[in-house]
Image 1: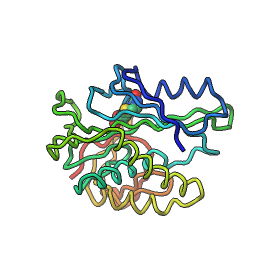
Image 2: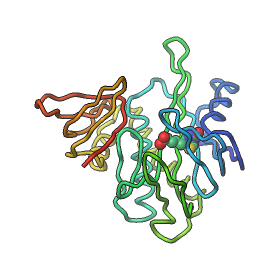
Image 3: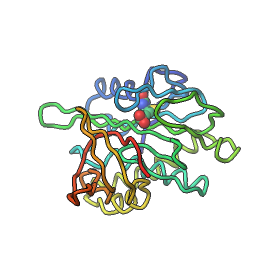
Image 4: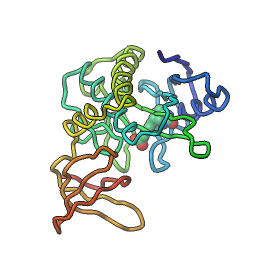
Length: 242
Ligand code: BTN
């Protein structure tokens, strides 16, 4: 099972997990680094993940044999299953790595990996879940919410983490033993983008506009464009969905 290391404050649990992975080569296979706060929490696209007390911030260090394309989305499915076990609300995944309730972000995932030559050394799945925060700064790109704001109740962070690890571990074990069906089914079921019209910024001033058909087994978002051709994108920012 997962060895847990707790901190009161860190720059970033992903960074700390990487440091530990570098120091303890092969013998450390499954580890979780948790911190009450982070002063340099990392988000996707080099954004800062504000990490005040009350949120759950952790990074899971894994050493699977290969880097599989659904690891990050799988971590998002585990967030949804955890939140649904705690409160029965309709949480959704926004490809590629956000969990939302009513368009408000409640969790984000940052997955990183390191290769030595062609061999995968480790994977870090970093996860921030807004649990007991009572307010948020104004974000430019999105609105945030927390379990507290949705329910008026506080939750024990350690119990939430244990529930998360239970769901994550089940999905992970099945996935590395070649069952991606479960993750794909859940992804498509929980996807907020399914059948929505989206505008996606794929970089270099290129924008893809179309209707989302689903997510494929490589983690790509399948979009039917206005010319009826499908395009599959593997990275990008969703600028709007309706
Ligand atoms: C995003 O939505 O942009 C991803 C946010 C990921 C935040 C988590 S908090 C725990 C872990 N440590 C980090 O520095 N980042 C991730």
